[in-house]
Length: 118
Image (cartoon, rainbow, N blue to C red; front, side, top):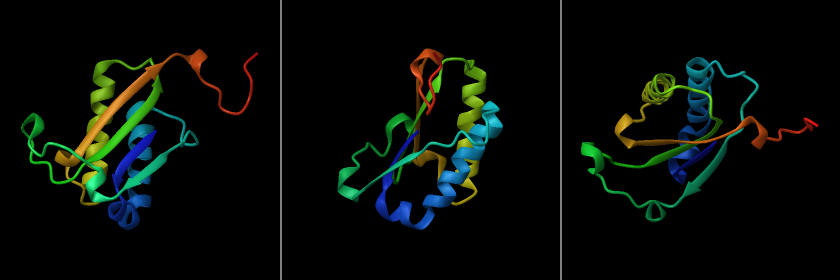
């Protein structure tokens, strides 16, 4: 998972953002709690460019969350996971309008996590 956000936000809430997203994946997808791999990429404000009204929202900042996962979840499950992330981050003061969450999927055969399957 890659999380792109303003450097000052990461400094203030990075650990809470990390924990909130992770717990949402555990709860929403039934993911193993030890399956936590996150890369925070922090930026200066001028490095994050976005349209504040795209998709009819009132975006004040942008937090981009890109989740890499195996193609195995149905649309309803993915939407529930999006809602879980928005709720958990909302609990720490991050507005859902400021989130951009995307999924990149691949197959089981496309993963190596420290030991061979052969």
